[in-house]
Length: 314
Image 1 (cartoon, rainbow, N blue to C red):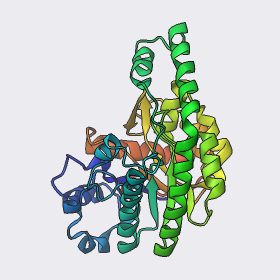
Image 2: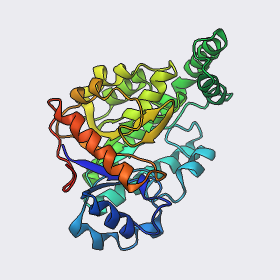
Image 3: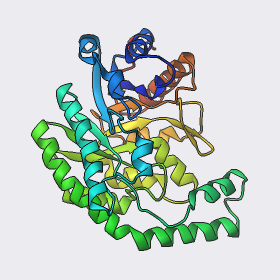
Image 4: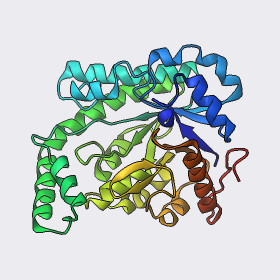
């Protein structure tokens, strides 16, 4: 398993992807993921850079025109109950699939949308957690109401995703691109483990798999919403890629080793030969990124999952 780096680290830090790739290659990376912060103008001329690097995955929407935030605000998602908006959500994913096909990238990571709950449970829930009130009656009551409302409203959104994936998996198969459904950061987002089981059960396994995000899983585990162990115990054979980042409190996308994720409980359960991407925020320095890779390399070496560190990083 070779470690790659998401362009997440470069967005806002470097003026162009060329500068990002140049810096990342200086401390060893040759494999990269184009994330959903990459716009069309940033992709101009990218074919000229591919001789010296490998793009292993694309995280939709890429190109981010419109942005992931704008798609969310307008509910232009594959889970939307509005047929016109759902169609636009499908088109956003198709653009990423087309880019992957053009650049000979084998995988596209897909956000499977959300359940449109009627009130914001996330903000007060996370505020209570950060205040150290996760064990209080107030917190548990809010947690229960959140689960109940999501459960009441989830079925039509899940059906919308199923219908969307029928079209997307057919389109992806024609382009020779595999889709990875990612577990998400917020509880109202799709999928829960039961939803993922249903979606994978419907989809052709050769074209749709599970993209496991360690940090997202850890945050929802700490909030008491979904046990981290469910993702690995139920879906390890379906994992086609993984986002590796650490969590401090409930803040994710930190370089590995700068948080408190129990890596020894996770890494041995990852299947070999999957795409492994370090997904670190741009706020961290190059030295912290390199340190995170060194940390992961040491952790992997303790277990049966083979890992190759980027050249030049011990």
